Length: 223
Image 1 (cartoon, rainbow, N blue to C red):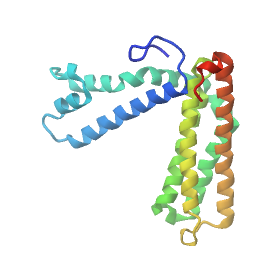
Image 2 (cartoon, helix red, strand yellow):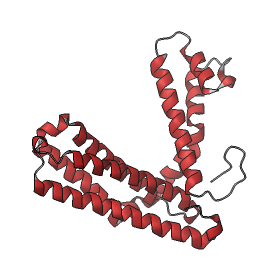
Image 3 (cartoon, rainbow, N blue to C red):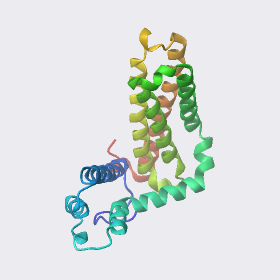
């Protein structure tokens, strides 16, 4: 990736990519919170600029384009890479067995909701569905790139997919009660699908970490 925060251009490992992704998540979340808090304040833009550290905007007149540009600045290069990789490699990730298993899991959960209308108002069921979908999306991001120089980014996205599927597994366990109406056979099928995705992510992370060590040497691996 290109130079970031004054660092020379070099290959990032998974931890540097994760730090970058977390920083962008934090900036976006902070901006959205500020926007919600000061939405009706006549000095909203000045307050947001000050809180975000966008001092160069305090005297600006055209706020909408300037704020959007600054908010997207850190994500622009990442998004450009993601879009390019997805458009170039869509067939690749869609044909990957792990992504197909994750996508099939989301379809299966949708069918479970169709069979159990009460799940729409069940927090554990909603958490199960949303994080299974999130895991599928993170896998798509991880598997879209075909540039081995971005192994660190791939591993970082796989770690996020693993976190999401783990939360889904915890939510599934909460549904294993009579009042929540999931049958033993449904729960067994759900567990099988969840474990298949989780184990696949762990295996793939191991493969990419091995490739990182092979390409860049064990001294550059912090796993």
